[in-house]
Image (cartoon, rainbow, N blue to C red; front, top):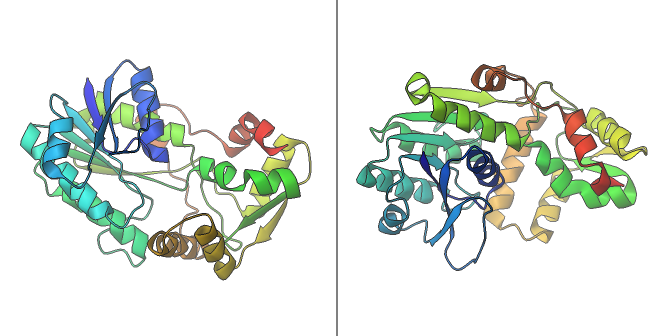
Length: 284
């Protein structure tokens, strides 16, 4: 199957490309024009993702499309350009990858942004499936490995709330499962999670067990979280979006562990303890 992925530079997009290409699919991966990014296992197309015609040209010959938009102020426009291009080129099925709790009328900002992208796919007239993954395990290690390695510290803005973190690789498995049975999954939405909800303290314990040293959890005040995001180069808009997600998590709205991954793939989702052990060398 020839599959178009709208932005393979995202964490979700990269995991999807890796899984689909590993399964022998012909994957065409869009990356922002001028970046020179490479995507192992895929044919890369540098494209202006806001340009409907450029997107249509890039996805010529593809049968299905994975909408995995980047976290950017233009995400709704990118989703709209991709879906309109899909209609123009005869894409047979769209898989929209958004986030847990997304809805066009969600009461939190990032949920609305992703929800609008999902709605564009739903109203396109093209058969679609929506996948809404919870926070990825990879974010914990990618964002905090230095502090864990150098200070034995995990600082999160989630309060004492639990989160059913999922492995991004399981998202790739779920996308593959949907594409293997598109008619069965058409018109459906799946909330994807890991196997269990975990608090910051529980995460720190699992990371410490993997690294072979104590790791302490510390609640990160919202102002400090915002400042850290800005210092890392995030735009004001991205900071606002991620803070809105942190607020939802603090309200215990990301803890529920669903059975969707096992339902779609036939296997249980990966556990955080196993993920931590796989990444132990980065934490020591």
